[in-house]
Length: 403
Ligand code: ATP
Ligand code: MG
Image (tube, rainbow, N blue to C red; front, top):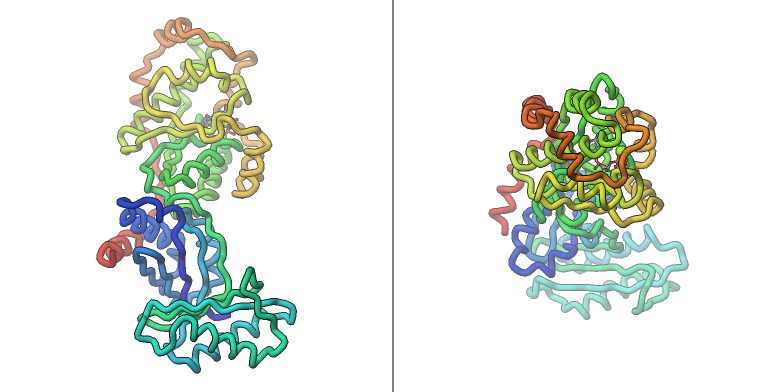
């Protein structure tokens, strides 16, 4: 079917009273970024709905992308015709004939926001319903849960017909909850953690620690590919690569094996926190899940967490591995995550890490390291890769005028 627009219903936005305007603007911006490859598409956001005017763009290509944008309850591709009874009837008949297989029940739900239109909503229900019955005399009319609900909406700029509502990704528009730094390894858990945080409106930047030549170019690429997998939920994610070789070599040379892991994690956290601060993030996110490995006992968490007061959100902390894998499969990161490229933790993993590290020992061993110098040198050499669609800013200004 050749649709002329997609009507988008907001998700939880409706409950967010005062913040509504910024929510809608952010959603519009995110939709624009997700659909940056469709230059003819125009977005009109108002208080209650968002209208994507297709201007000839292909709805079949747009729909899968739109399904990934958080903050959308559902959307309906629709056809626009003139506000003329005959045209509306004809369009309704064509729409039903494309989907009716001889079995489905139907009803018409008309709505009139343009009250100057010649028929009321009830009259339109009858007029359009009769037109469909005229074409398919055997079609069953059913008011409750019909198979086909043909919606007709009379608005100031035309009559809009649609027959389906596609479920959106729900959640909150990414960015409306502020920004957090996601510690992204190449594993299964951290991309899932990122996805879950984005679903609650957190804009994320990915921080990845790489230790070349101990870690390979492929391991780095894998982390970037994972980032790319979760990027469509927002349109762009900044990927921050942190050189970690010197830190790991120093730890290996100066710290007893049992404490490598704890101190490595503390260094990662210190670095992530500095990056967060300079990039104005509010929180840190990671993929820690209780009990999975030595670093993920509560005692370890306490020892690692000691280096910062910044809130650390652990979206998958209490999920079972199988639940996490389920989500990883749903968001299509699983197959990438299980590729066997060793990351910095695998390579420097001690044979017997302490599952209950003692803080006094941690402090004692860290005395042997030039923590400040290590942090400073790593930070001066971070690499940031950013993909920001050019049209995003322009669109944002446009919406600001509309609202
Ligand atoms: P994942 O599947 O996310 O790799 P994991 O079960 O392998 O998790 P760990 O390797 O113990 O668990 O890592 C715990 C968390 O620490 C990760 O989820 C991630 O947030 C962070 N982390 C570990 N390694 C790195 C890295 N190289 N770069 C960035 N963050 C990392
Ligand atoms: Mg890992």
